[in-house]
Image (cartoon, rainbow, N blue to C red):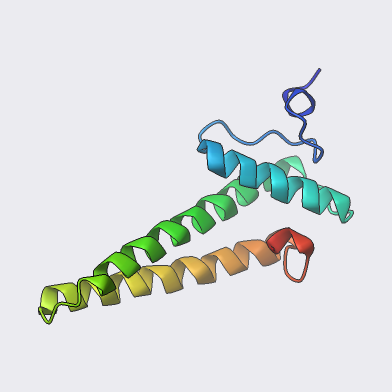
Length: 113
């Protein structure tokens, strides 16, 4: 029995081993949602979906960092420059995530929720 079936992945595609546990769960959810919508993940899209999941995880981490920096309420330029840098990273990651999502056909589907 293939690994994906043993793990109960209805999408039929096992997540790459290098993803964290939370990222693997997100991968499975997205894969199953796409499969339900008639857009199953092909072997060539596994890495794209994994990159998409890692980017979404990175965005969540960057947003936590941004909230922590903003909470410091410092007038120091170094804090302000870190806030700008983290904001730029969030914007950049979001744009890349959106492009990967479009490549996977995630735009306007239940899989993005």
